[in-house]
Length: 414
Image 1 (cartoon, one colour):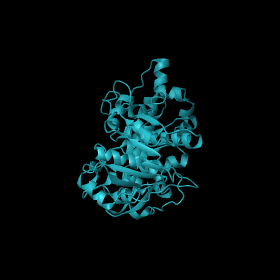
Image 2 (tube, one colour):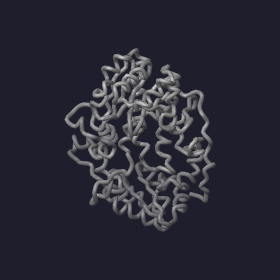
Image 3 (cartoon, rainbow, N blue to C red):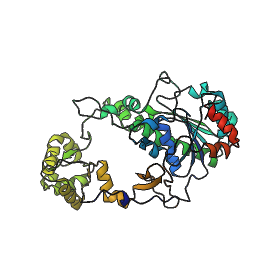
Image 4 (cartoon, helix red, strand yellow):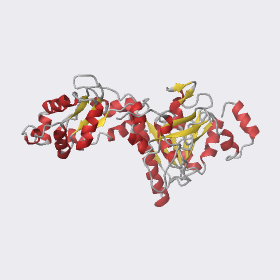
């Protein structure tokens, strides 16, 4: 890893891009918690004008999630970056009426309430279409807008379990394990932003209309399992957890170094295996019938992993890294965030950037992914306070008098 100091200022200050590819795309983020806000922040990174709606009393639930430092919700700072924040009670008739004014001329609405909630508030798809038929409505829910489970509460952990992902994590003789992070919500957010772009393409470049996108969390995660359904259908094989070993590749596992660190690798091609065998001084294994190709190695995976692990545990992590790099072995040290902050590749790629913030002074967040050569995205500002843009949007863009805005605020509508 090298002896690098962990320094805030080793990462560049963000540089706002003036040529973002989604400039002019207008998005209303009417969702709550992780999946919908993640879908919209991905669009905001590339220039979409995202207006985030929060309940005037409770705010978005993500403001209440740790980590919170001195009352400042740090997760919110990241997930609400590049968004303008307003407050509005969509469940009150006057709030719904203002919502209908707000969405006129917008491109996208994103919501992730339980199915039927928008309809109950009088702002369901038919109402939205009557206001502006060009609007694309992305609806994210645990189980989708149809089917016997549609009214169940659902979130990332639930989706991970129902999709089969949770069953693949953990040791073979141990319980299924959660990823320990709302992976299902984030996966759905990626599918959500992708689906919006496809719907915009259909509408704007193929002459189509707006439409409703029905995205279920469990289906998004299920799609990530790729070969599992066809394997079961054709072979009646249920893919089960194998711990740190990949069931179809050997050697593959998590290996502990002499200094108590961890590395992982999977020799997924013959070339990778041969370079690894040479790196650990076991070129003889390349021609050994037990390890000559991947099927043979999988059959003898315990022995194969044992040989690799025995070599690694005799060396420190830095020694293994130096040796594997020299031989072109595909591997990675298992990073924690301190490792990421000190790593040369993270720095060289500007994978994180420093962003000025009125609450924190300056904070580091992930940079925009991916990198565009001609129209890059950028992190212009971090998540604002509740209602920070009420006056700008309600008075400046909807034309409400300031006296009316005060009246709405006093009534708990905004």
